[in-house]
Image (cartoon, rainbow, N blue to C red; front, top):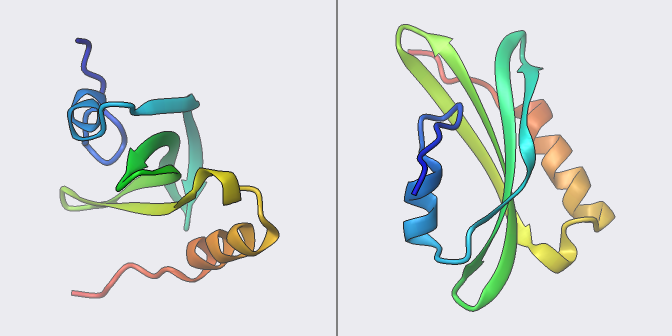
Length: 99
């Protein structure tokens, strides 16, 4: 099984072993987040009998530290306006904690 690294450092193969039906949605997309280079990845999986869709946004903050923000919702509800507003709010308001 091939192993690929996501921006968060997690590997695709580890997700496959955790969720036997893991399926990446599209390609990993380069983006920026709060002025930093970042990458987005989406995937589908079944958790506790429910098909879910997750957006993961990984970014480095320096000093060898990084964050992986994840938003997961039932796949059938992914496009609901309330879910999309919640995701936008999380991405807009998250702040890296100060040391």
